[in-house]
Picture 1 (cartoon, each protein chain N blue to C red):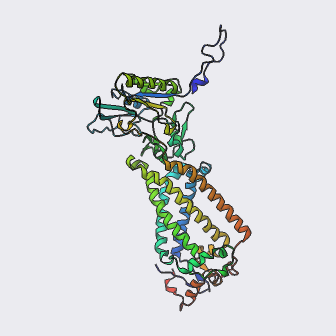
Picture 2: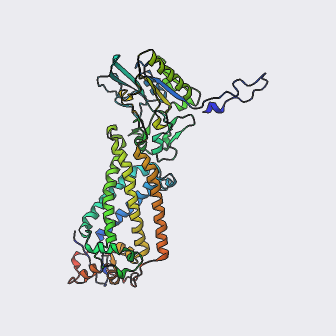
Picture 3: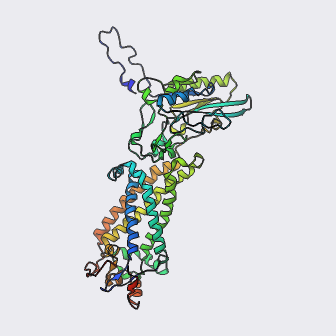
Length: 299
Length: 223
């Protein structure tokens, strides 16, 4: 984003060409989460809270390592722990870092009625602008990943920003910085996709995970957060990651055909009434307007 | 609740009691607020309506509460008027010849009781859409209390709420147009409560005949 505009074009007193001139740069960003090397340490959860200024909140225990059942308005990054009986590898503890997926085709933005409350930057980050949020919660209906969360105190909706404030300054998101195993990567979409594909191939060829693959769902136009999964054919086992996420059909129906039909009907109705008035006019009653006085209060 | 229609001492006819008018205007004022704030959230091109009405956040907060007042008014209307709103053979005949009514050839339409078939349609349209709007509105009001497993309710609500609202807007536009621009005396009947006998004969002959046949004005019920 901002780094793109700070790309050096000319340099004074410099021998030779500008370094890097003419090189193609990808402005879009992507977070790659390799679930196969995640150890569930939750450093990313802590880093997210620290950077975004949220304190620790009530956690819950349900016989797993998971901090709470789902992300919260002030807890945007949550590792989901799931036990899974793999046919070849036996019992596995699947760990998937859950957060906003930063869809290329964001359902939250599609559903939102508030001017400027949700923006999508050219780098792919989908960001809530809480100053403009009216707290209607339609984004929660538009999102196929159950990410936007309503705060009853602020009466507004919050979610992961992909650290847009850090990214705009050329830094990687806080979660990436904190990861001790290197299972989190950050870069351009093309680079992350390439890395993810190579890691998946390694898992398939070397590690015996024949179904390993990249999760970059096409139903929402691809995402700016992608996963490497041991079993990409069955993402639901990773704490309910949807297999084919799309913007809900009813949201699409509401925001497109219904809206245009409704607008057409309302404008058509107004025009129809105006034409009727010009053609036929009022139903005149001789003494409708002459109201004789009456005593006391109205009947 | 019985109809208080009667001939008044000054020769005019009481068409809407004080209670009916009060409920009607409660419903209409709350409805207009709901429609304008709803339209603000319906289209970005109408979002400015929310600013005119005090800001988008306030509109979002108040819309459901005003909706509850509107619901109360509609429920009261239901109990006041439902018994007079049942469709009759006469109404079906009126509907078949509705083009005469539209073209101001009222003499060709069958005589109507206190409410004509168009008014009855308006009433039932608002009652049915009101129920749909209430149910879908309650779902949309509390997005944070509806668990993810019940998200399909929200998917239905985001369609039902605007669709039902659009139907009411259509009904409302016709109703407002009839009352303000077409039927002279109709607006006064909902403000002062009374209409002239000519008006009653012209538009609601069956009602008129029923009332003038009454022995004497029941002045004791006047409030």
